[in-house]
Image 1: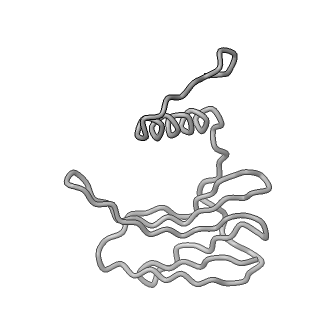
Image 2 (image 1 turned 135 degrees about the horizontal axis):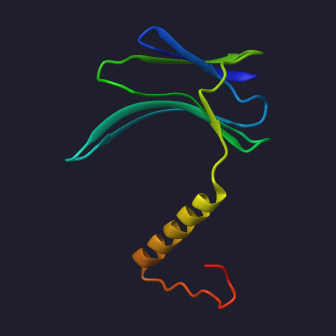
Length: 118
């Protein structure tokens, strides 16, 4: 299977993989504002056959950190530190809030039929 071997400052963090079907990601992000700033690394994925999300590593970074990600073929990977299914009620609530926010932004009115679930 394809996998990511991830090192931070020459230290091995993980070998992450989801098998032949799934999603694998390594994300480095920086968020800066007047109130807060964050520099972060997350290695995660989705096992599509079981609809489970996985996190191998999630950690803060600092200026000067060196990340090396190597794409490899391997038969074995590290066990994720966290593996979970999303809560469908929370996901639905978040999706509705997202739609309502965009409708509001564009000045649209949402009309809900009387028998529809709110």
